[in-house]
Length: 272
Image 1 (spheres, rainbow, N blue to C red):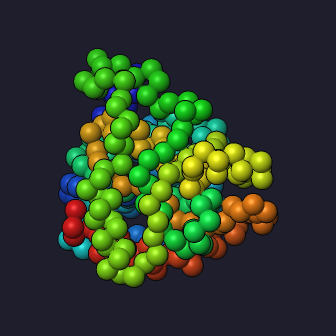
Image 2 (cartoon, rainbow, N blue to C red):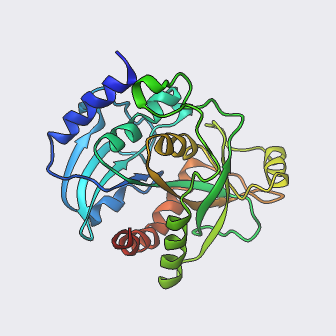
């Protein structure tokens, strides 16, 4: 069965579970799933019940699709995402993004935990992504044809992160006195963290933050006609002499910064 048909079947199932017609999609990264407590009229759909959906296997990723209202905006949220290092292919990782687009979502807010490379970054800072570097990664558009999607596989990548959304994000962070930074993001496949030599290489390329997600979802969202805002929550600092890093420490930093993230999203949504 084609990817297009699988997406339509999954979208039809999700549509049958709720009257919500989402305008905004939100991906909640490591340790951020509790954000859904702020939402109203929630319909929680476990991933394993949705046709063709992968299942989260990582601590801090609950594994639910949420249809809800938040501050009078209808949203669809992923409480946990999928990663290449879990053994999934890029098509599987980005499958939920195709489903969100099929359900009518026009905007995708991609939130992830990331390591801060730029020396001005601190733990808890929100980094708004203005561009990324990913030429070494397998593309989630591999094998895509115009026949199913009506859109060229040769995606223009000159403005993957919407400038108007970035401006709104900056304005919201300023209003709420939330530390933020606008920068260049990259992705490594993981699950191991970066070596000091790799950190030095990324820094020399002008990269400000690094994670293990975001970029595949960004490419597919753009291919699906969605506008993207990338938000990286800095959970660890990658300096010249980096401290040891653990997944547990990343989750703890994300938990501590959660109120800040909630405040940001709550005030951003009505502006979209």
